Length: 94
Image (cartoon, rainbow, N blue to C red):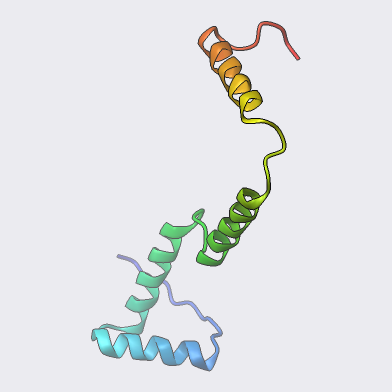
């Protein structure tokens, strides 16, 4: 694999973690960085843990709210939507 030398500015704590990881794994620091970037790249587009927790809190708050209309009305609306989907969608454009 061809390599390119690059320069990054990192804080002391990150440098210490990089050095520790390389030492514990017995691999060069560049390999630790390559693997970390590869794992980070795979997670792109996924929620971070803090985002996931925030969204779950929003859902919990919504679920704690009393319903805004009777369950029968909701059931009828869902049945109507399902019927429309089986028939190919809306009959008239909105």
